[in-house]
View 1 (cartoon, helix red, strand yellow):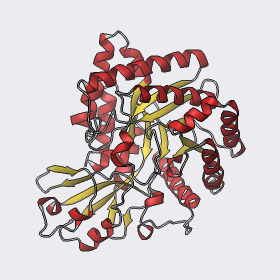
View 2 (spheres, rainbow, N blue to C red; view 1 turned 45 degrees about the vertical axis):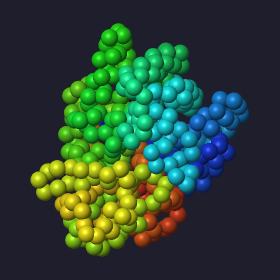
View 3 (spheres, rainbow, N blue to C red; view 1 turned 180 degrees about the vertical axis):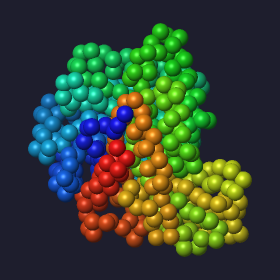
Length: 397
């Protein structure tokens, strides 16, 4: 009962990767520099957009160049982020990041292709993981029988991963990543019932054992903390249900206490209302109620007269902020939740893959993101996060 012995990973979706050349350049410029600043091994959690996957499949030399770049910089790769399908660095991503959803065969083919690529990067006998969308975003249009159609496609992928394991000796598992206001989000209300439904449909087809083996969750601590969950209890609940957590995203969210009276905090939070990514916002009230809004909006922060949402005890916002920060000026972070979640993860009978995933550095408010290493370079900030994560894991191990 301990943490994964694989090198700590960081997700490369923090920098653009629309082509294999861009992926290689990012690994050389950012990942390798961050690795050189640390005294422990680092793994690259590759984000491969659909355009990159197509390029890798079409050209063996492209695949060789990617593997060579990893090898040259002494970087392992055992996990892929297959959540964003298209351009994750376009001007506006928002709710489009959940498309295509798991009803779409495009999502199925992309995921199977990513698994085949990862199998080539893993050593023989290695285990890999693919994090993916939480079936779909509830804010997007959904077809009738949405869940059942998603389950059919997920069962297909489970069978595909089993076949890949048998043929290559590489075990690769899918990790569905709950996210606020998506089909999988809050543990008790959404994620547990959805996963039960998946396993029930698999049981009816006689393949529940395989689906449980090859399909589980990616537990993103920021996502669950934003909903004011007891993150340790959530990890324990999944374990009791026999739902495997295949991957853990080591992440922090933003917290604003006493929003109606905290003028400095509201002004600071205004800097986080940016146009690229979706920043689901949750409010906790004195009576224990939790309410939510789809995105962080300036009009909600500056509303006069104040509405009920501003009268909450505190807000939490889905904006990944540095994991080494407990405060950001007048704002707080969910760093204590990160510690609590990892303590519970250490008690599991298996070791999920561990990955730092702060993809928001390119849109991070500069004054709100102090770097303990004293440098503003992206690679140095990534190294600082990895150092902080490594220290936390060592303290808890």
